[in-house]
Length: 200
Image 1: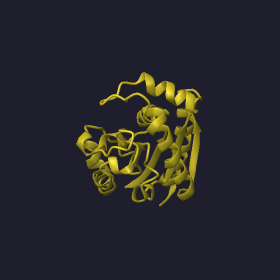
Image 2 (image 1 turned 120 degrees about the horizontal axis):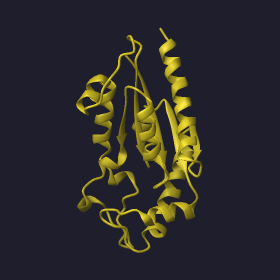
Image 3 (image 1 turned 180 degrees about the vertical axis):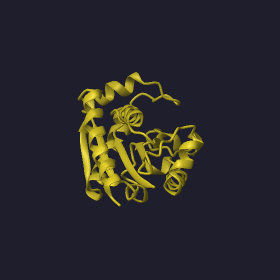
Image 4 (image 1 turned 45 degrees about the vertical axis):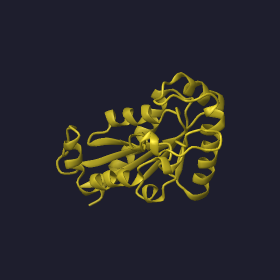
């Protein structure tokens, strides 16, 4: 059984989820683990001096739980897909299972970053990110000034740390069309799948 783990990272509202879902539809034997599913309860999120909840940091996430789920997939991807109600195809015994891990801090958590075979990072300019963020409805909702007072500064800080400690990231222009981005990344991943299939 052959496995490929793909990381799709990037800033808030950069297009990570859209790309990941598109890839899952095009890649057989694939599934998504989304980092946003692992936020701690709101009561456990620390608050800074400005009264802003500190969601944009690793301490706001149940990373141990996320790693357990990744480990569960690594041990038995076939079982993992069935547990999630997803169909699997064996492709005459040469099937490659693909895990797509999507999130805004996936490359900043070393144990998780170390499992990736491919790394992609979606980026968009500040003004586009702010506009997209303001059109989304969050629970709890963003308080006034939250984007400029917390979200964007934390993105810059996390991005700097990521670039200092992680190599092999393919940066993607989130202003390109969804179709163009999906086609490029899908082609790249399918090349990796073919390499795995050719290995004895």
